[in-house]
Image (tube, rainbow, N blue to C red):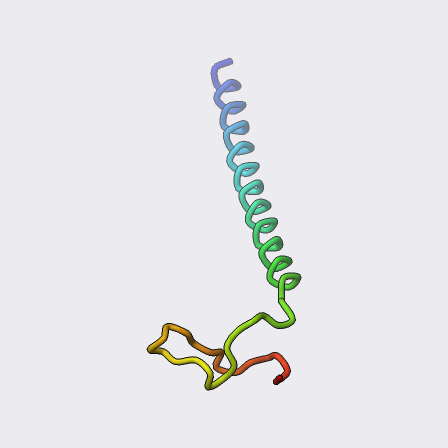
Length: 72
């Protein structure tokens, strides 16, 4: 009778471990898919910034290396 209780406890422990691993992997997949979704959907068309050559490092204002916005 004691051996049956030990076997049941081992099966339950293995089930909890595998369910925890599966839940962790599912959480990781959901978090990463959310990050990919946010990265794709939040790309701004054009943001206000200094044009190339307008900024000076001495003033603490820097311009984009290469702007993706249309020139003025």
